[in-house]
Length: 391
Image (cartoon, rainbow, N blue to C red):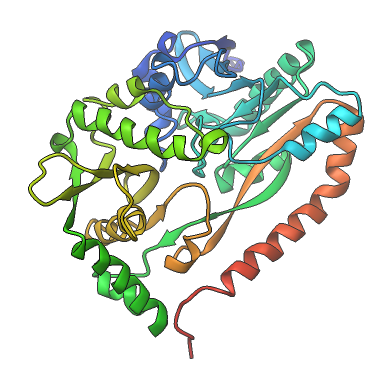
């Protein structure tokens, strides 16, 4: 009888996506529902200068190989701050400071600047997920302790993967996003019918104000998207960020938007705003789509028009989503305006491991209370949605 030996794995930490073969990485990433872990997107973050050591995002990707075949990977970054994450861990950083622990740098797993659920280890189909997960966590633990990294954090994680990682000792922290779900809508009027009469009138009035201003919204996909349009999208994005000053979250470069052309245009949906007799858009929102998912990311306009933001970022994308049988639409960070327009609060989780025993004990002691408070917040938001009363 021949003894069956375990496969020989090798682990490599790689500091740029360009050193990983795109076809091998995408063999792991393309089966996922979300598009933000695909090679083209992550590599563009790096080559455009949006993600770099200077920006406080040092790429440090974990890869697992069998011979020369990539069988597992995790996009990871060493962070020198907490900006661009949209999970606000400043209270943990403050606690670390009071304990005399150096919180930064920390190791982070997420798609940079992208608060969209779905992060997980990328593992080839047919492989032993538990075994490879154990191997990768061991490599992460060794790396962090060797280099005195305070902790490892995964944000906006895939719900099923979260359960696996909890079994490996990671702690879940509850947050919420605002997600639109397609309730079998066949038209925008079906979507409107879900609201109470008052909010239905409000939405109609908001869309009418855009039309009365002489504006027309046009969805653009695929070959209708040019490099110049993507460069123009950067102008809108930059201007919107600048309006918020320090809190503007301007992380992406013009080169990032331009490099989406042509290889990533099949994922992009632009909702362009045109004024009468002007061939160039005066506003635009930038979304990505994959399968039956739609993700809103950025927007801007050259002038302030009443309700244009709502139509460009919510109503017209929802209309497009219904036409294209999209099942969920994640419009991006923030929520003040979203719940009034049919985006209930939905739970999402981050995962955490701290390597200082005192710090880890405090996290474990208080996280249940923190999560219970967040759950109450989610329930309170969803009790105040402007939908028709059922029954």
